[in-house]
Image 1 (cartoon, rainbow, N blue to C red):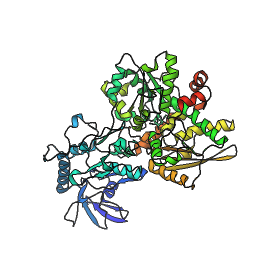
Image 2: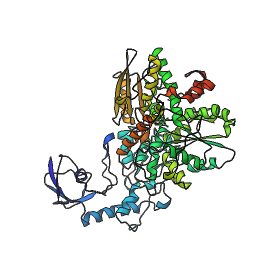
Image 3: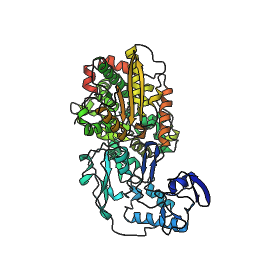
Image 4: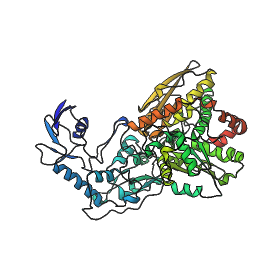
Length: 574
Ligand code: HC0
Ligand code: SF4
């Protein structure tokens, strides 16, 4: 341990700690900008590029960046001297000299770390008017907009993409004033290996990386009298949307969310959870089929489009192991434009299916050519949780005082198994609840598989089914997924079934969720919200959903049968 004194207060900290870590232990706030410490997912951005966190150290002539300076025995630090505060302000003023001043119309207005810092430091004038960078905006993909004019070179996105996700798309290109963060050869995003997981934009402090905003397209559809606009909401949206309206993370706002969508004017408000139950019918059938007929194992879940794109690029020799199931929201679209359209007696061409998702990769997924039927897309438009909040605000809806409303039917009924899809481990837990009962013909009394839950990078469990040990693994974050898949490829690990989600925490940590600004406790609270919603349900196994039974009886026939294959399954492209 090392003794240090910060602003006159003594503290003992572990050797090797930085000044910033020591100050945090004393609850002394040092402003930061590039720094980001997401300890739970082992990401610390060590770029130390912005110099906002400079402090004075006794005996040292120059200011020290607190995030990158280790403490030493007897170190005396002052964090709030005139010299350090003035230096911080100058750093921000210099950043602003090469930053657009269009805060009022910026995607991140009121939610930008640079804007907040400038306000906190009392920056009230643009002191340095110099040369400005001007780059073309990269709108090449369906998911992510890259606007390098707004980049402050904090490198958080690089750390996320390279170290956590191991996709290695983003890095500094060029030198000096010409430096930008982008793909090799400055390729447009849609020509790279980007998985569109959106994790880079979830840690971007400014609007350099944002989602493709589809809000105006959704308003256009709603205002088109020829169209019937149906909307579905993903499991993870209901435990995060409240944050946009000042509620605690993890608040379950399902009823208010439905009410807001009805107020906005959607013709029908349905639930992706219904389709998650449907996915379990298909995925558990596929698992049982592979298990009983000597099929390829392990089976990998296939509902996360970032993960699907990752394995298509990086594990193209293993395309026969993922489940062939489409993701739930795509299954929903396929069922809506066939079964529902018939029931409602409307032309599927006039139906617009909108998905509200915690995810930006779902935008890219919806545009994949395999995910449609006879020239019609399963899902027409995807908006994120943040975009839904924007629509609610644009409509002038007072979200917090809304009375709860229920989803419409027949595609609005769901079980507890479906809502847990939103947290890492949930999809495989839901599949187990059903596969166990199908294989043993017995009732599963305790439906909660604790070993598969939580924020830990990779989790394992063995479940005995009919005397056979079924080995399960769960992982989240693409770096963890890569490590697991490499072991399987090398024959060093064997499992029967594996769930993989691209985003840390699963969908609750998706790139389209309200910004967490580095506080991962928010993700844990959203996970708690997910499990409390599961516990509140009377039915907690997908195969018990009465509307799902009806769908098979009236339209699909057998699970994993011919009609189901035609509508609900897909294939992968190397
Ligand atoms: Fe998910 Fe989904 S659970 S991917 O994580 O499977 O985005 O929430 O909507 O489709 O249901 C995201 C969340 C979904 C889908 C579901 C799955
Ligand atoms: Fe990397 Fe994901 Fe961002 Fe693509 S979306 S650049 S894979 S972090």
